[in-house]
Length: 78
Image 1 (tube, rainbow, N blue to C red):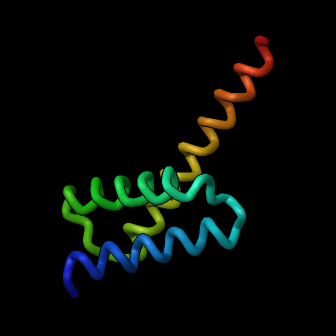
Image 2 (cartoon, rainbow, N blue to C red):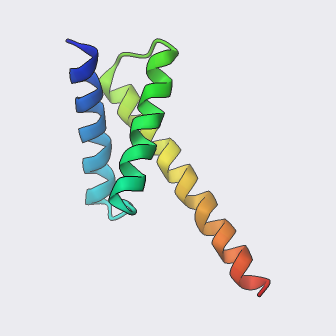
């Protein structure tokens, strides 16, 4: 399977999972984050679609939680 197909499949898996769970944020920002995460993993040699997708999902969730926490703290101190 080509790298392009691997990336497309991993992205689709991650996107579908986050969309179904209601966790997906703004489309452009979310797509860029997922693709950046998948690309970073590819640079380390990872080629398994599910691993790429799962790690991208985990990274997205961690990023979203950090963003929420930051907004909550900011709102608290206003």
